[in-house]
Image 1 (tube, rainbow, N blue to C red):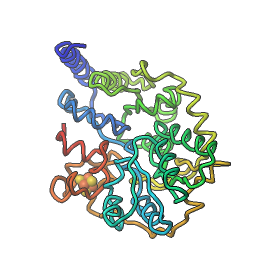
Image 2 (cartoon, rainbow, N blue to C red):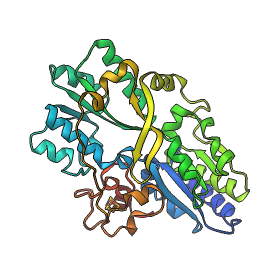
Image 3 (cartoon, rainbow, N blue to C red):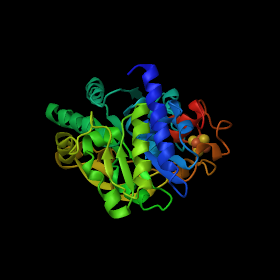
Length: 359
Ligand code: SF4
């Protein structure tokens, strides 16, 4: 679509949102579950196209942000105690741990290798010639199938020095907790995760919680269309699940990818920043793949970790606060000197507010 046509389409969608919102007696709040949506909303300045009574809040869909500080601590301790090479995605490198970040550990001589694909971890392990090579596993159902494929390939090749620290998360358990909150009226559902899980799997939102949900793409117009549909559902008191990202998301998702996850991983309890321990919301390698489980084969004593009490990441991930209400935002906490993970991650809400402003 040409730029002028896009702008016309955006104005038309905005007008429809205003018309639907005009029928609402009170303010309504929608949560964008996915960190990529958070960034896209701020980059496109979409909040400026919404009426006063439509509020968008961010949710727990940034995997780096919801990963507890103790995960960084565990990784560094494994690196030190087992002389391991740590393999990670770049987003994690600057996240503060209790005794420094992976970046500061590297500066002290620790071995850190940044990769763009989990499959690169196999090459790293083969090059390490027997030295333990530990992949730092964070991510949702979007990333997990490629990590499952990596472990399957490693098993087939007989790679015996590759391990994974597992902080994988699944989206339904926290979404059910958030759906029970009275101050949320609907959800902009994550497009990437939905490509794996499908759109049908969110039917519990209207059925059990009377909340609306729309699967959305990541272009500005995709998001505006999804917001128009959410406002319409609330205004007409007919919450349901809509799939506005049909060019990528099928109602049944990707069964092959889900089967791969089920083959390699088993559910476990997982701790989320802001939400605490949620039963069954994590994944660990199972069966023959448990040979890759770092918590079993490279155990370390991780002391309890505490976040800086002034950091509001936990409340931000629950949609209860916005970054500009944190006293450290833009002063003591910036992307160069982050205090919390929400300022580090490329999908973090604080990073989005810092880079693009509150709109
Ligand atoms: S601005 Fe920094 S300290 Fe404040 S909530 Fe965000 S990450 Fe935490």
